[in-house]
Amino acid sequence: MKSNPQIELRWRRFFEILPGFLSWIFLVGVVFLVFFAPVLGALFLIAFILYWVIRVLYLTVLLVFAYRHLRKQKNTDWLALIEQTCRQKPKQSACDKTIEEIQHVVLFPVYKEKEDTLIPSVKAVAGNHYSLKKIIVIFAVEERGGREVLEAAEEIRRRYRDKFGDFLIYVHPDGIEGESRTKGANITWAARKLKEYLDERKMAYDNVLVSCLDCDTRVSRSYFACLTYHYLSNPNRTQASYQPVPVYHNNIWQAKSFARVIEMTSSFWQLIEGMKREKFVTFSSHSLSMKTLVEVDYWPVDMISDDSAIYWRAYVHYQGRYHVVPMYVTVSMDIATAPTLWETVCNQYKQKRRWAWGVENFPMVMMAFRHNSKIPRIEKIRRATQILGEHFTWATWAIVIGWLSPLPILLRDYLFAQSVIGYQFPSITGMLFNLTGISILICILISMSLLPKKPANLPRTQMIKMFTQWLFTPLITLFIASLPSLDAQTRLMTGRYLGFWVTPKLGGSTEEGVRRKK
Image 1 (cartoon, rainbow, N blue to C red):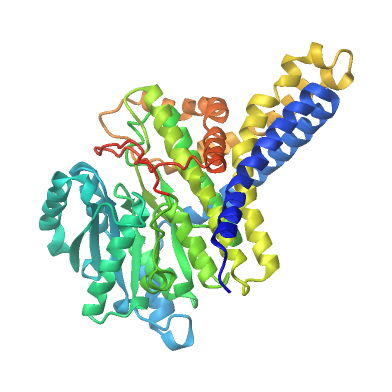
Image 2: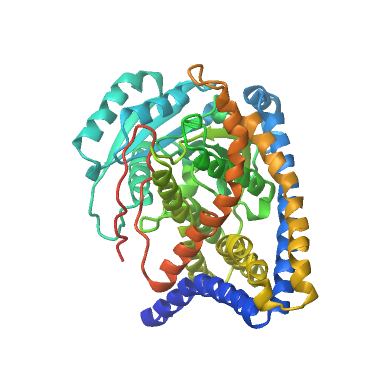
């Protein structure tokens, strides 16, 4: 039975509107309570802050456990572990393959990034404790990036191709019908070309692991060994993605303090997410089997949030039997910073809004759920609620905490008159907020332990800044935490689709957002 296109469009618009509608209704409802039912509003805010504090403490516990995993596995000899668990008795374990069978492909999408961004990333791959002849590097170059970018890519290829099994460059043509100007369209083009390359050499797709890395991503020395171990030891290896821990260390000593705190918090969040296996979704740089890519028809070519969309596409394709394996090995990327504080704030806001545009996954998943009868209904409800709940929380919590909770204090005489709750509200909320100091202290200690070595040309006072920068936390909560998400949801709700904005790279260039094709 064919679907009615008009009905499908209405359903999609309904799912696009729902996240923003819920967020705005909630925020307007809180404001209404504070002004027109102040006692009830104050009680609600106390309950909300209490819930938020409990949640922060819970997430802090998960962060500590995740950090312990990261420290414990930092010095793991993954090649020896593969030998021990997979080589001795391969037929009696999940390891029914050997390390010699596995071929790695590293896919770098390139737009206008320059050599001083691309070369360190290639060097990081070349510096791995792994057989480099089992690694193929691919530059997926955008045609619209210009001839200069392609020539730079060719020069890097000439300098490094002898180190690897192969070094390929695929140029993604501009203006292909049905595509938007997004990273997903670029890497999908390159992956299709890779399929032709593998077919010519009769290489099995399930022996090929594709790591899609942003062009500023520098993998740690044990990345490919760690990835190989997790892949070989996973009985459902092709129905899984493999997610490292992103840290923003490339330019951390040069970036603005404001940006450093935001990106460190982002790394902490990914560590925490890795502890919640049933909710873990791919983010930024990740790896998966070529067999998976072919079967799910690669990354979407018309979505901005391709890194998470590939997970949901695979999840639906495999009828819900798809998962993300957390790898406690780091990949380092650039902090979105700029010469001035205001430019840094703008860059951070645009980057977080692009991340928050992952809300576009909600209508995509819901439309897929409508036509998929093999995924259990209770599972559909659970995962739909997960996506909706995460984006709802992201868009509202900081606004309630930072902007709305002070209202009963600022307007106490007007709203509460002689009410007891009005006079007790500041002391109650202050006591609750003080509990979060424990979490901030833990974040400071963990961030300091993860820092790369300080460059010799920087003064020792720079270490003091690494401590004091956490004073920006309240400011970040007010202006960066929720507003980008609410902005993204509002744009999706009103049909003003977000354009793809390229995050400024260290040594790279920026681009104005381009309009998303409808």
